[in-house]
Length: 255
Length: 352
Image (cartoon, rainbow over all chains, first blue to last red; front, side, top):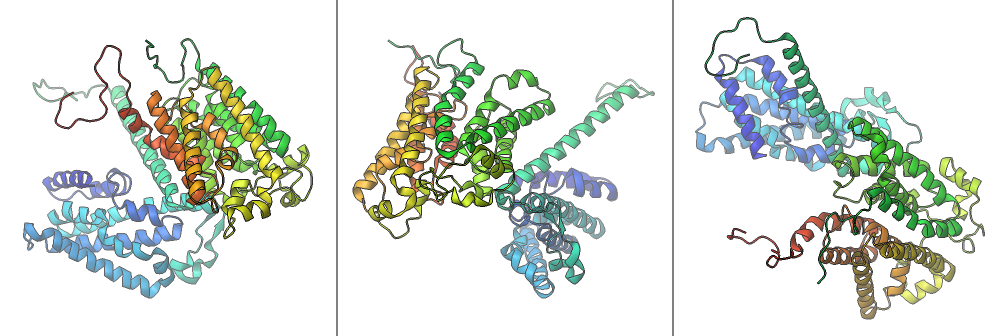
């Protein structure tokens, strides 16, 4: 976890060194290249524990996203007024207050989902993805890029959570989008989609071990796509041949 | 003096091809298969067919995806062996999709994703078994009873077995009964003597049927030892540990535990000892290691049977000891001829 936080930190310093924030890069980093769930492997505990259905995953994903965005904005605002020595306690305090807000909101509006997710809502505080982004990005960047970074990282996290939830719900129970009314109210009562009729419950996929295998498959899928993209770029380069204007260089690579 | 000849663990003698070894192990299960078919009807046989087809298809599919030579690896019979072991381990009338799930998971996840034959840290057959045992507890606990014990009074016919496996057989309940281990597990407050005289699964014919199954696998296993495909170390250590554990606890508390004879002749004791625990890939390599490995499985089987959540513990015992196999191997390296005593583990602060 520490290592990935450090790589995130180096990423952030690279981003910071550029004049002005590169929004496209922030978006790409959050959703794909530096995805908190697939690449940094942060927040594994809630990810493996609550992704047994789409609605659980979506609920926790949304909560995490809101906390991540809020904490990134708040950390970014106070970044110039907090001494380096006490920055981590300060960040944790901020994250904890946002988590408490979310917990109270969920208790008020989606009480059943709050009960299902249980301990994992307060545990958002300990989600390393949030502290990692606060320390690696928000504490070094202005408010707007930080907010976008928080949103995109949260979106990337939520996206994987929901994908994993859908996989496990489909394999485990043969349905999709069951109990969505817990999150969206009475409109969602008819959203449940029974994909396979008379499906025998596959307990293995419902239990946490299934989440490990599902996550492994997702990571493998991402690596496969990255690998293919890399190959495609390499063949494209080979086909194009060396660039037309070449100057004699004594250092570095000729491209 | 005898020189140690341990190179590749699956070939105790030189010049034996993997496919020959696998074929012989498959052939050695035949006595067990025959006895199971005789006692519990055609279900095992149909399971074997489904399992073999699934194994070959999933192995071929994954090999094609991994761009490996398909024919070459299919002809080493290792996928078929996994299928056969799973086919006889699963209950005889388990629905077809349970068999397909177990075999496909064993081949794809437990074997090929780790790199194919020789690279899997866990016994593929037992991974597949454990997956379906955890996922589908109801069909997996539905064993057929021997014909004189069940209310139908006969074994399932071939057509009935087909119907039970592929569709649904409403009268299946009159053919099934608890296995002796299951019956003993759920004796609740009865003491052993009352349990053996009152519970149906613990009566003579039921116990004898399992005795026959275990004897058949014992015969197959002895043939494997005679052919030098497996060594005696793992099975003897496993059965010995099971014997000592059950004997000690039976002496200590005879009113709540079963006899060692009961433990050795019910469930998958012999099948596990000779066919599962001796898997050359996922078990230990050195002879001393095999003794420790087998004893560990025997102890775990007794612990799971007595205090665990499942009636039999062979699958989980083997999987747990598979975790430990590399460590055991590390600490039991045999001495190389002409060298000093083998190093047994890390020596901190020394460079050797």
